[in-house]
Amino acid sequence: MHSEAWIDEELAELLKKNLERRTQVYSEAGGKIAFMGRMFLNFSSNDYLGLARHPYVISTSRGYLEYDGCGATSSRLVTGTLSPHYVLEQRIAALKGYPEALVFGSGFLANIGVIAALAGRGDHVFADKLAHASIIDGIVLSRANLKRFHHNDPDHLKKLLGQCPLSGRKLVVTESVFSMDGDLAPLPEIAATAVESGAMIMVDEAHATGVFGPGGSGLIREHGLEGKINVSMGTLSKALGGYGGFIAGSPALRQLLVNRSRAFIYTTGLPPAVAGSALGALAVIEKAGGLGVELLRRAAIFRQRLHEGGLNTLNSKSQIVPVLIGENAKTLAVAQRLKSKGILAAAIRPPTVPEGTARLRLSITMAHTDHDLERAAAEIIAEVRRELRN
Image (tube, rainbow, N blue to C red; front, side):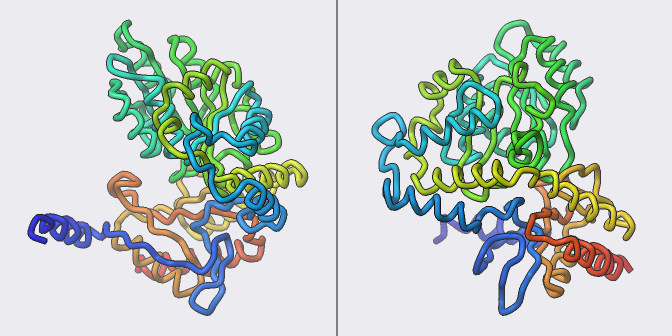
């Protein structure tokens, strides 16, 4: 259609800059998958603990499916709040060390729904420079004034808070484990700075939940900051292997969100089977104990081998290990070469990361054995990078 001519131009420009993306259909999910007639090590999965296909998680999900049906069939404030929602929220609150929790349809919905409910015109939100797109979109939707502090820099945050007008509410937002760099936020310092200025604090623990902290409770609880951080946000779609998002906080916060969060009010409740899979995953994590510790041990070994191969993993201290390459075309070439050798490693390019910092984002999962990681790091990834560098 003539009115869509501009779309072709936009797509051509993306292709020219090596920024075009396309979906790829895979036959299964997880850290080790069968695809195109061969086995691949999948370093692009967020199924960190290997729970997406865990038998107990599947059976728990199936039980809720058979008892409660396929869907909640309405929004949570109509008749869409079912027993699995209530049980899951109680379980999340206990894990996170907060009085209450509230489940959302996804992590993206949780972030935009919470931020837009806590801030509005005339208010001020301070976000880490590398905060997730959903956080930035939530701030834009809120119409609050956005100030971005330098990545993991409490001193710059303090400076910005000191320059803030006296009128309006203040909200500080950061991730605890950053999704593209794999580094950790200095939460104690950020919390102290925010509390000193009278600001509320929201921390996105999407990539920390299930991995860090006692029982996989996250970095907020590892640092004992439940009394200082107002909103502990997380997802059910990373280490828990399912789908959905949540927040944990005070009873007043939960009640405010139930009444003010459009991303919660105006959408159908999470399907019972999805809530059931999260409950199954939480039970596995609790029973197994130490899954996150073991995952981080494997990631540390993998990171060390990459360093020995001369690769730059930035400041990663988590199960997310980036390999910085820089140029978009070279990053795509490395990813394609790795795929030919049985390794799936997504090429991450702008606008997901800043210009000039295109990279491979490698996620370590419990499906990756020590042997898998040694071979991938020392014999394949470093070798491919050297080949394409020459």
